[in-house]
Length: 241
Image (cartoon, rainbow, N blue to C red; front, side, top):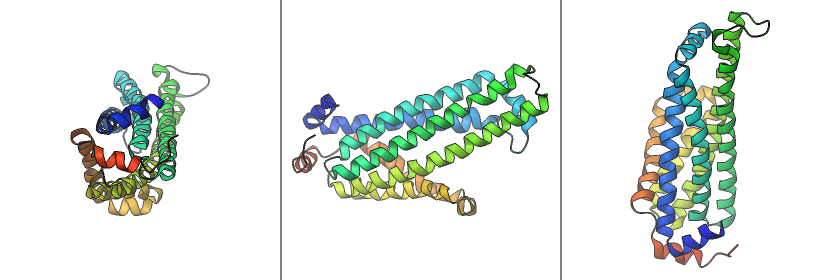
């Protein structure tokens, strides 16, 4: 960590670009893993069809689980790098934001681990213990529903983290306030997951608020990083740790 902080003082723009890179890597692995590789195998309300899809596409299912686990690692690094980028704005709030981000990553990891259970229960289509095929399918489907619940809770904490870092970006003066405002709107989109009836009522239009925030943050970090002089100016008023 000391080496990263020394590098940040020497080249804050490079640190910000690294944060943008890990945001890109997290998005490129997490969303496809959860919604494409795994999501396309789930048939809503049909445990038998879902189990059949998993057994016929075991490699795809395993790749989805692996992608989700890899995205957790990227998310942890991204969270830490954003803490370092935004620490000069408000060290305490940046630390609190990092705690929220790491909590979200832990829930993301839990959701990914739960995804392993359906494969174990289905046992390659072979009987396991005294379970009937119908019960195996029901248990596998129940684990997938549990995964979805855990993932939604992860999204709430992820949204809370985005709200905090969006606010810090807005206050930073070394990144555009417009980017910070967009990121806060993006965070609000995911925090609303805490109230499913409202989300169901406004879906999918609420997701329109998410794209500009996460995409603008990623692109700004990758292309422009931060204003190095202003970053160092803000860092000069913080206490080194």
